[in-house]
Image (cartoon, rainbow, N blue to C red; front, top):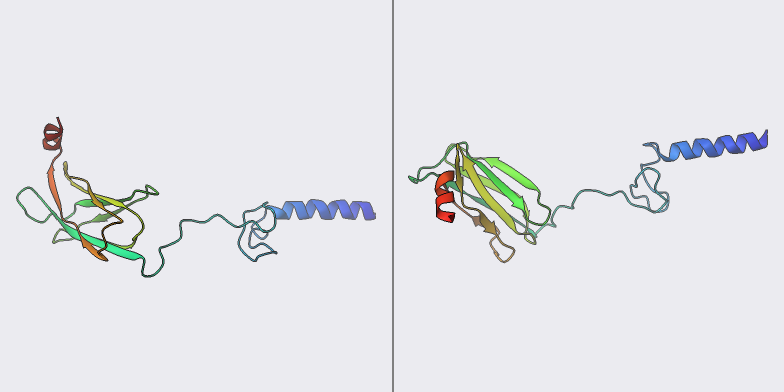
Length: 149
């Protein structure tokens, strides 16, 4: 009877090791951990947000070839470290903005709208502005190919 109870306890303990309840925290550190991982292992999480004072923002206006602001253009912001892309649809006045950007990461910006695209622009780690302004000008996609060729 004792051997059966011990084996049953071991089976139940093993089964619970993979359950969400067991994944709550490590008994050693109290930190979250992956199911079935050894005690003391930490749960892998997404990239930490930048520390206060280490953030910046970028904004600007998207304009067409005639210099008119473009409402509804899509501005994409690419983190060159993680390759994560965020997007913003321009407002009535053609403006866009991204906040909470790390000062320790380069970003690439590009706008597009109805078959037109802007040149890629870069927000560098060497740009010390806390509130950078980068305006983007749209050009027909085929015009960009002619310039490159």
